[in-house]
Length: 58
Image (tube, rainbow, N blue to C red; front, side, top):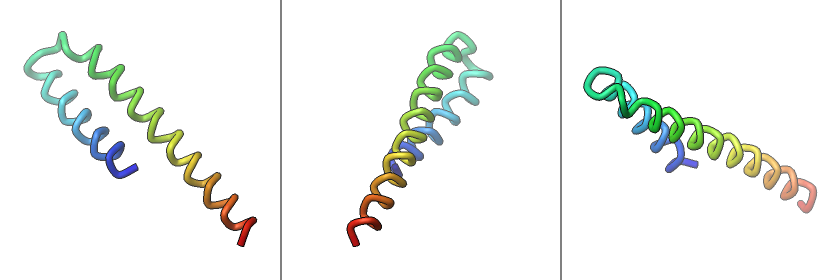
């Protein structure tokens, strides 16, 4: 999850830079950021499910 969070931060920086320097890149970066956010959200759901499963076993 830390890597996904770092990817999101990098994409946010890239989006900010593209908005100023190269607006044509915004569409692709916006899609990449949305996918990274979806991946992070799913990782969090999976993490919670794993914690709950572990709690049931303990």
